[in-house]
Length: 100
Image 1 (cartoon, helix red, strand yellow):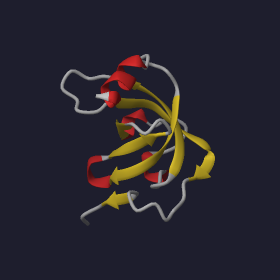
Image 2 (cartoon, helix red, strand yellow):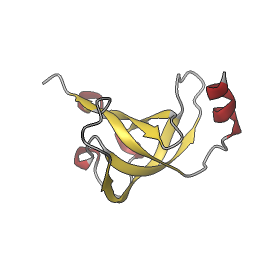
Image 3 (cartoon, rainbow, N blue to C red):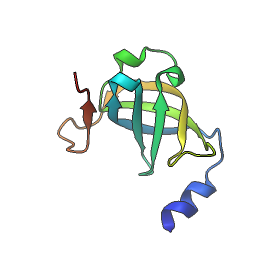
Image 4 (cartoon, rainbow, N blue to C red):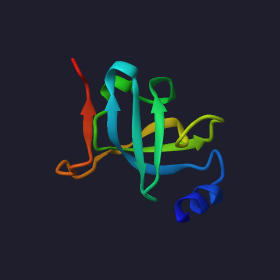
């Protein structure tokens, strides 16, 4: 339950930092793991300052989040590259899901 309490303490629209851990290219979506350890989903239309296609697993980003009614995880908005820094590429959790 600790995870639920921490998420509820966040304010919608608060700027957070994290790294992209999954990209689902066919759906133009991805998952950001925040520095706080919580995941947020995002869609290509939420990317600002670069193209979704230019993003890579491990890219550091800043973002804001909101809660959707039926969402299982918070939704990231205003996803922006954070100084083009990369996460450790040997991170096993980081992957791209592209069935093509």
